Image (cartoon, rainbow, N blue to C red):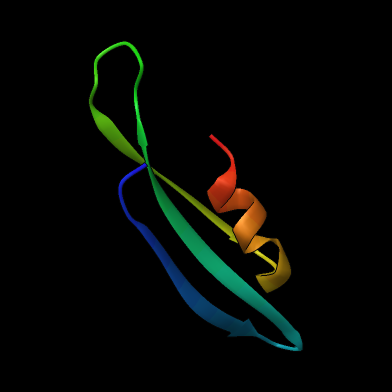
Length: 50
């Protein structure tokens, strides 16, 4: 995993965070981006997973 990016989003009464992480493919070695929108307290769990 090379870089990670986190941006805060507010929609209505909920506070959400968009997390982007770079994942290296084991077959080709190419990098791809995985994006999710989740709660701020779950960002570290998402970024630490492989």
